[in-house]
Length: 386
Image: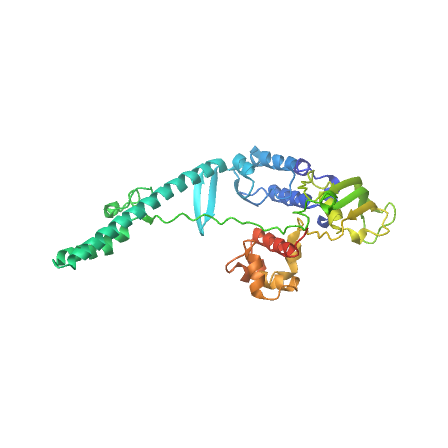
């Protein structure tokens, strides 16, 4: 019943994992985890590669009595999924964990409120420090003037060493910290001070896409008026067994498909897992040429405009890094792209995709899934697909 709810047919269950689509593999992994009946269920990006129908089923199942008493910890970038499931949110920021009660919408509201408070407290701290520095300088100037006063100099030094350093400290409950905050040392009363610092926002990642040669043209007969890639009445199927391309020996995935991709298109391909979305992208990028030629399972016409460079980031991009896990991101890029002449040039390019600091020097196996995806994306974008 679990497999049926996830849309896995008997044929899917009997097939080798390598024959399943990315979404079907993810369903199989989830089914195995859900069948374990564990006390603590850890889900790392569970909705990746799943279609909307299965995402809705998974959401309902995680809320059902079948998992009553099971604690669930999940990592996800799907705000709607988090809103429906979560009772608490833990944010990782500046190598610390910040816990918030409620779902993701409540977390966003808390973050906005905290940012407003933090900004206000930072402005107060700056004003207090400015006033205190002005007072200290005034006292020192008077002490060193013709009317020298040792008491004023002592007072100025005291303010500089004690008062100035205490400005900006607040207790964990948000109230100003004072020495008598530690008057009672019971756990109920103890409030450790934290200093208000300037609010640090996570840097926004901006990808720089190369501009195609036809982007600024106004010519009516330019290539921009013609499709870049055209599929005309194309049918395609994969061999059921290695080397089997005889008639009847292949499984039809797409049948009589016609598609035109123009220069200004932004196309989303949608559909259930296993329906052939990735196969369609492979046809557009000419990655199916292994089965092409005289293969009767590949019929129809595929035309591409001369000079068009196709870049591909597949859903299984991690497999491209499998044999390079003991290399750094910089070493990987230098090996894969001979036109990159120096480590500096490689790191400069990686920095444009959020791989900055010491990240390009770390082993690929130590990088998160998101950073690995950025590495593959940076490799594709070096060749300036258009």
